[in-house]
Image 1: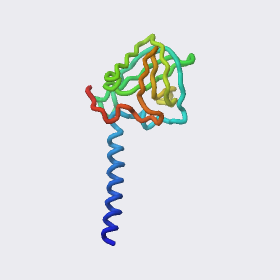
Image 2: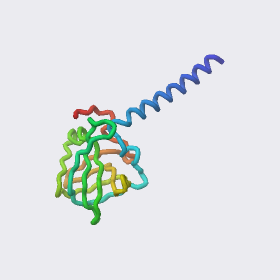
Image 3: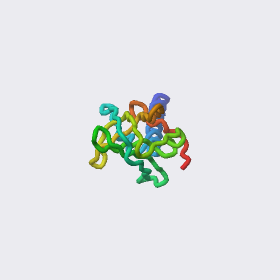
Image 4: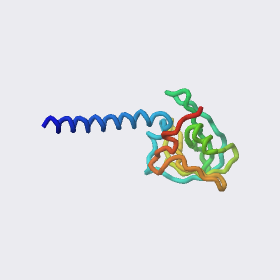
Length: 145
């Protein structure tokens, strides 16, 4: 009986530790985008980049991410790409005037239409940033900025 109790207690502790690790691990590098990503709102849009912004995390001032402002279907759209370190590693180069096709989850952030990108296409270059469930490709990679 005691052995079974310890086994159950051990299983609960392991599950709790894995859950805590996942929660803590998910915060750096996934940010608000990971929590807001909704697979039911995934769509693909094409548009022209009007600006590229480097943003700094609220909780972690060392975390920098890239947001692209674009006109898609005649409307402004902010596209959340991912952390600067990952985009640099993948050699993602986007600038104002570029034509992009973006696949991602359509969300509203701070009252503005936004998209959390899963895939980015520029001419013949394709970058996969997240999987179809919104899981970031950079998770677990070491930051260099």
